[in-house]
Length: 472
Image (cartoon, rainbow, N blue to C red):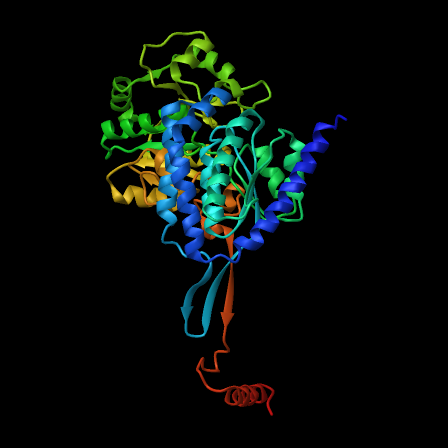
């Protein structure tokens, strides 16, 4: 008998959610040491499979490149595991006189996986969930179903072999929106961890469940006159070409003062940036975005030379980044928006104050709360911008794609980057295991000392305090 695909997807979601709840009841009894052993085993196994999974992801989605996706897979396994190794997430976290704090898992997590990072996101989210005693069920993007499912299988197998219960890591196998919706609505699911397009994130927040979602990235990069221009351009080139621009924290525009325009252009051209003329920029703009305004999926994660060829013009061999001159931000200005490929807008302003206003304008149009990069050695300028630019990650002299996820900075290594209230997110953090627990607080009466006195003495003292407060 043939069953409707949506019905099958919904039934699968119900089954996986129920299995995850049963598994989590066991996980919730594990000590920190036992959870840590599971995390380390998963990270080690996933790291060994990093390149194979990267090859599968590129082959299936057509996004990015194998070398950089391999790096992302190892970052999501090795680097994340190292960062959380000494983190306390369950049991008594802190003790002080009169107050204890106890880490409590939230339960079952539904995790949405994007097509741009379909395997690394699985490992990263699984590690932070397992570290905090939670079970997790993944919902893959239809464009990346096979590689995401394989990544989840590797994680699940390694977790079970290290002592996790069956069902602690699950993944939907039927690429249907109905299954994802059923998973998010499942009564067993206590938290939704949403990384993906704006529609999916809105659905997570509209589900009636607690959700951690992320907004669009559209980060400007300001090259100040105090910057080392060669290093600034090198950082931007490394960042924006990394996996062909699929990291949401990567730069989307460069902003300079008029006095810096020539120096920045010269250095950028030497490092493989191609400044398009008006005709070429127009051709590429038509390719980048649909008439309705959405990003064209076929251009996501493609190299600069491929993009130029598709648009109908040629660029020198070895071109890394395509650059379009822009001055305004808004829905009719495609280069002022997020472009998940190696394409940048180039804004030239008359003053530092104009740069600040333009950065805020760009982010207000798209990308509020996400990421901003500055290249400068003048700390007063850095301080001034840091106090005014509405972002959660303010990066200094570092490649934004790598700095934003914590690979080249002291930020927590993460592939889910909260944008805070200004960006429509419930968190401004690089999401870590500490975002996936509740804290139970054990608190003593301030006027009753926390001692080892016998019960009769404590009862007498409590009675005395109560009678005093009642005025008797």
